[in-house]
Every structure is written in C-alpha cells, then in structure tokens.
Length: 373
Image 1 (tube, rainbow, N blue to C red):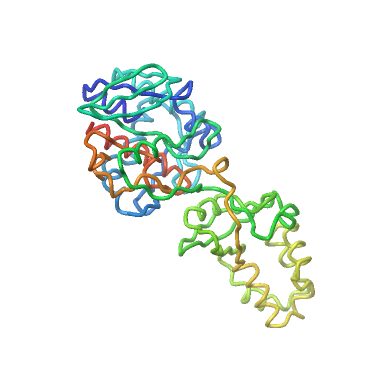
Image 2 (image 1 turned 135 degrees about the horizontal axis):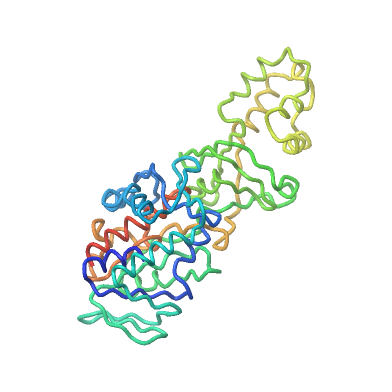
C-alpha cells in the first residue's frame, strides 16, 4: 500500500493486487490490535541480515520521523509504550485506513481477492491472476514472509525470486517463543510466570520480561533472542539482572531468613518453590557454604537453557531470511539482474527486532522502491 501510493504520487499508473478480502490484515492484528507502527530509535543495528549494512540507505531515506509526520497529518493519536515503541492510541485499523487513503489520493487501483498464479517477463511483466492477466513495466513483490499463515501468508514472493534466478537466504520462524529441550513437565508447573530478565544469545543481550509457557519460554526478551538463537546452542538468562547474587547473599548472611524466603522477596514465589524442589538448598543463608552460594548464583544469574525448537510459523511474528540482499540495489530495492523487478519488506533478508522495527523497514523499503519504479 505504501509503495503503491508513493509510485502513484509520481504519476505512475499503479495497480495493487491483494489476495485477501481486505488489505493490511497483518497490520490490523499487530501490537495487540494497536499496531506498533515504528520505533523512534531505529538504526541499522536493530536488524538481522547476512549483510547488516544493506538496510542503511533505505532507513536513511525514510525515517521514523517521516512516518510519524504522516500519522500526525491524518490526526491519528499515538503514544510511546516503552523503549521508543509507538502505538496507535485507538486501533490499528487507523493505519490501514491511512494507507488506503494515500492510495486513493494517488489514484492507485486496488483489487482484492486476487490470487497470483503466474509471472512472466518479456519486454514487460505479465501477471496471471484469478481476476485476469495484467501487464506492467515494474513489478514490486511485497508479499511478506511465512509467519501467520492463518491470515494468508504464503511463499509466493520466494517462488517469484527463485523463478528469476535470485539467491535466497534460508528462512525460519523468528520473534517466536521457544520450546524447552527437556520436555513440558516442568514448564507446565511454571506456566504464566513472568520475570524481568536479561537474556543473552550469540553475544546479543536483551533486558525485558521472560514468560513461562506450557512448553518453554516466551515474552519480549525471548522473542528478541530468537532472532539470534541457533538450534543446539544455549541461551543464558539472568533472572536477577543487575544483582551479583554471590555478593548479595554474602552481605545478607546476618539475616535470619532461609534462602527461599530471601529469594521470595525478589522472584515469584512459585518459581522459587520450583527451584527449591529441584535442588536449591533451602536452609538459612548463614548456613550456606561458598560452593552452595556459587551454585545458586549460577542457576539464577546465569541460567543456561537449551531449547529443542521454536513454536513455529503460527506463533512467529516475522520470517528470518528471504531474498538475498546481494541480489538487490540497496537504494531502490530493484533486482540487479532483472530490471523492473523489486522486492520490499519482510520478503527480503532483513529482519528487525521486536518493537516497531519491522514496520519501519516496510515503510523505508517501500519508499525506496516507490520512488524508483
């Protein structure tokens, strides 16, 4: 929608093909129905890609401030929730309505319930669809990734890229909950507990909540770490971030309290009881040996967790991987070897952190292509 509007503003005759009954379904369900439409702190460092520098040009060409200005001009009220994340104050439909209004102003023709069955290229592109065939000089693929198949996500964009011989970076679910390798027995007892934690994976550390599920862990910090996690690698979790537990327990030796009682003031009680049931020494702090204190600190300050897998595409917010950035111009998103063919948004191997970054990449890459088609 955004790319089509940008192209239309330049006087280009623009057709938007949407295979769902309404455009923007992923926008509508995002952010708990309020759409976390950008992040004011966006830089290229908030993205994962085989080429971490690729996104710099597009992000510089269209910034969070640019999109905020558009939102303000449409009198959409918004607020900062935390960490630079901007949400609609009312509902996410407002963003879709705004983009559709921009398309109408730019005289974009929109066809919904339109499935693409085939794409060919001679002097122009021919798009065969359920509503007939269309010819165009420029074709922009903005099909997203494989996450949220229930709302229509498909691999069409990847198939088009492969058809034209473009290289791909392997895809997998990301910004997604993780499943314990040890099985669900312990997880079920802890389901629903949230803990402010520092989570580290592949030299990246995120501090936000973790949430115990019936199968493993979720919560913002885990979703962020899933962008960097690889199967077979541990994730390190500090459930008392900022506190050196060895020092804290040694300084508390004079207190007439058990370890469980002391931890109960700092962690959820159900979690503490689980730790005690699984070997944490429940005796007065003054009686703990140096080794026991060290072991306790290791279990809480540096809990090393191994996960079996992710919760899959149904629970993933984004797709990691996609069309290789080696194949595309970073300034226009055009395929270097196929003039007139563009790829934007999630279909490209550029994946943002949780918190509005993926939407900002969508707007920035769409703006770059919309100015060039």
